[in-house]
Length: 208
Image 1 (spheres, rainbow, N blue to C red):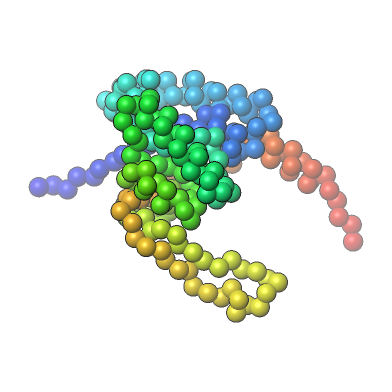
Image 2 (cartoon, rainbow, N blue to C red):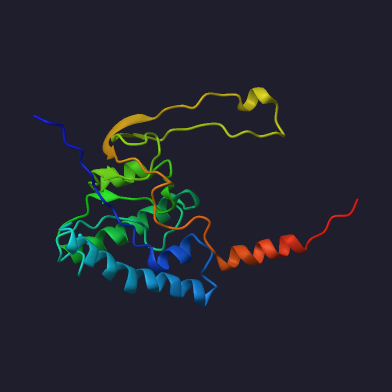
């Protein structure tokens, strides 16, 4: 029997949320409008594409596609308290369950950043797979819980931070690896706030 190559296509619809929680566009009406374009123009175009090629994706749900968790406002889990993470998960989990009629089974962490507690709180909700790690380029693997490492602190002696990475425990959650080279978001991308910051930097002259 010939081997088959299996392919799964996932779409992160960050829309306005991406500009609120990640891309520093919360103060820019223009950047917010880019998020509206993604949701109101980009998604219908994708649905037409999926229909044309018979790729199974209220239009996404009704077309038979799975919808997974991806935060609420594209907030960074690493910057959040444990309670904030639980509150966002509880809220979005209920939203998707009510909307789809069944609980979500998958998760993509905003920013592709997972907190040390992230795997466990997802498992407690019955999440079966995640797509946020780059520990492999193409093969799924089981997530570990609470990997830890020591940051370099140049104010301390080298012996204080020359310590190996500590691997956490293997869990039952499957990881479908991510890759920054794959997403469709253009790189580099124009971001108003970043441009203003860079402009201020360029205007600074240092004389010696």
